Length: 503
Image 1: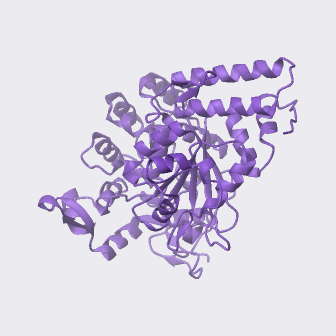
Image 2: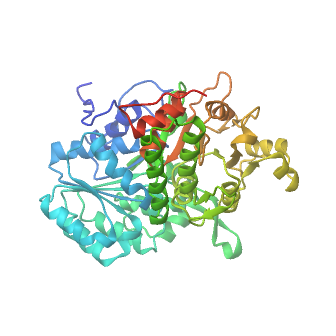
Image 3: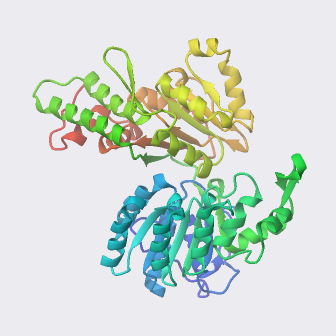
């Protein structure tokens, strides 16, 4: 094994086998296998030196972010790379700012805002050119962002494109700017769990970002790998020359699927952090203050009062607030909230396959149906709603499990918690559940999590929750562990004096 160096892991977490494999291929130029089903026999396929351009196509929750951060750390240690610039969807910028210190990196890091361009310039200068920054794709179209990047992207800069499907349009200003920068950067990386959504044409600019297919124009690439049809044969209807395309992908990419590299053992839980609008934040802070006042008053607090407050926080993040007189105050259009936008981004760019979206409020159910109609969703709601809208639960379950065009099941928690098998079928399993909303009943949570669980299953379920504050995060952690939720909520407000309440 002397010819095949081990992969150092420099960041603060235990590496997964798939992450080690990813860096063995991109940084050291060898692979051990294509999946866990193959023998562990190292195979050289490049010179033993890091690739300037590479794509880490790791399916959702296989650990793309730690992989990228560890690889940057290796480049910093071995090749003097100074800067780490990542392009990302706008809603993911703050996640990068949180992840960098979480994994023990000491490089100064910030989330870029176009309106705070001068602050970014000052930050870069004060860090003496050694920094990390997350920049949303939309910002690339503005001249001040371009000026900033032109000043700092050079041979000592590591540039990553998070959810690189965002640069699939070769005609957009965003894509053109991103590609222009790759000529100057020392290292370029694509990062995606779902790099192709419409057809092989989606890969063209991603190839270009990592210095592949230079000199080949988009239309030549599309004609080579896409079957065309429709009106005047201008619509992509399929793929062709697939073996040739597969070799191109393997030349500069590592594609990892959960079914090959995941471990079908315990379920995995993740939280998705939300940024709220100013109006939502104000109401959120008002509820927080009310809660603190209630706890400091010395009056005995009931379980119902605690749950009522935390449910109001959830309503606010969904864009509305139920009033004591029975009315509803709409804070934002529920279809345009940051939470709905984040959900759409994740479905489009990150989560492959079938997804269950549990929710609690009828108003949210209506918004979800309208927003996700292109996904041909199956719907399980109250018996009254189903009857009124001429829907039948059995038919909706069959549709979700067996119809490949139906990716999403919108599942009302009260109506869907018992008895439904929504695990899909062999070869097209539903492994992901994304809680748009939740109740804080342990029974509700336990039952809902069973909807995509089967006896002796050979897949790992992934459960994700939207959260917008520490108190929500602590409550969700309790749900995950099936522990006392109320104690967790109170503990987040007053960790030194948790009041244990009993139902």
